Length: 78
Image 1 (tube, rainbow, N blue to C red):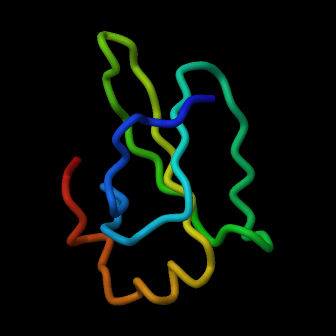
Image 2 (image 1 turned 180 degrees about the vertical axis):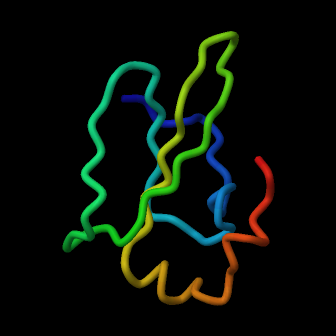
């Protein structure tokens, strides 16, 4: 797992602040059940120098509830 050098301030998928971001280029497993730490994880595909990667934006519960006004339908196309 890697962390981007220059992460955006808000998630490019839902436009809400996030707690952390990680970059993955190999296999991984995602548990989609809500847990104590994160309410949501947004995935954003990227091309890192010709290598397909996924950026995971980890949203804490408070961030998701504070950003409830942000509509996913209005999120940028990335």
